[in-house]
Image (cartoon, rainbow, N blue to C red; front, side, top):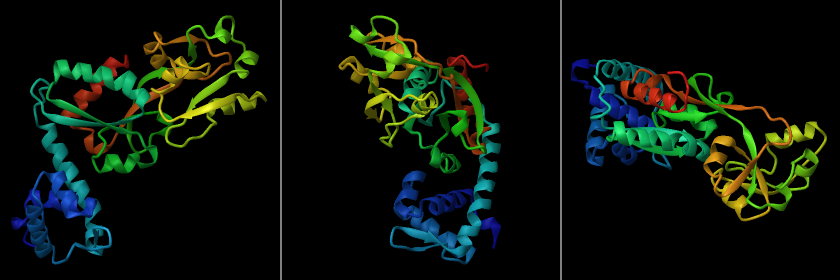
Length: 301
């Protein structure tokens, strides 16, 4: 192969084509027209002497040579990107970029909203795209650059990702104002007589780690509703006689609608960290954003 005829744009197109398996999606990712990407694919096929992508029932699938190229291609492009990023001066006030964050709605409320307020003041050209946290897919998403930063429990973060502590939190009991069962001390025995709302993100389960902790004590609570969103829970509790355990940072933001009480049995505090891939580790803009978020959350910068 004559490497003098191979430019960086072609390699980036090859990476997008192999990862997307579809010319249209690759074109959208690269902000190019479909005919332009098709023309670049033709040049790549000529230079590598291989079809690289062949038709499949859903889009296109890579050839054996293309599959062998993908890993070293990713590594080479990451090194080039990191090298270019490390030599760029980053000015938040004039920067234009998109930060892709994966997190739960709880983390959106307590971390992303404060970050967005900060960005509107210091970096108005930085946009934030929030997507649902999917721990099972997170490593692949960060490898492909679909997620720049994840807000996640350290125990759930893939070991190969960089991670940094942001804050810790604890669960408190919430109920509606004037709830007749929350006027005096809430004992464990009293707690078990109430109907409860739990959060089960996307699974609909009625049992959580709290129920496991109660089972160790030989008791169980009555779960009336399994919600798919943390943010929905205060509204449900405010309009019913159900109660719920909610992270304190989120509960405090809702105290006009609900009252907060101590959990009647001990529960461990939990940590929230931010996690990111090596490919974005040295990016100056993302480094700045991670530092800002850590500062907002009270973590040591």
